[in-house]
Amino acid sequence: MKTIKANIITLVLFVFFSPFCQSQNIQYRSKIRPIVKTKFDSLYPHASDIILNQSQISDTTQILEFNCNCQETNDMIVLIFDTNGNVLNKEVHYNSIKDLPDTIVHYMKKNTSSHIRFFNNYMIEYINNKGEISYGIVMLESPNAWSQSQYILRFKNSGELISKEGPIEGGQ
Image 1 (cartoon, rainbow, N blue to C red):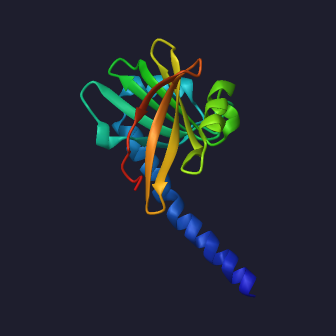
Image 2: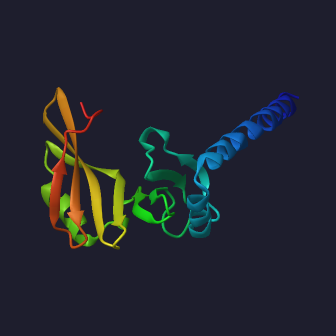
């Protein structure tokens, strides 16, 4: 009897909240420029959980975040579009170290120590509008037991370190 009640409650909650979630998706889609929506739909017709990044909206760009669940990644992709629907930048998020080039994995292994480690569940492949690829990983530095700082390390496609940004907010 308890199982039947639990199933009924789950079904009622699903029926009640499902339209709300769909309306959120429709609401975001209605604010996307038509030319951007057309381009996005042609690139990722099966994308889910699409979010128009309202905090970084401008007259010249629109930023869309979505869960791809596609061959590219099982994680999030962020696309920055110009007003003509061209992709200016693309961020492909990965949650596995195996998606990084070997040179970057080697860098991580070589530079791990008792006070430096790498967050292996957050890696980004950046692709600009020229097709140039770079990578970002998070480095955690703990000089003592009471503090920890987070940095984003950027690498060229070849594995050469480009920059170290940080400490980033939330890293303390």
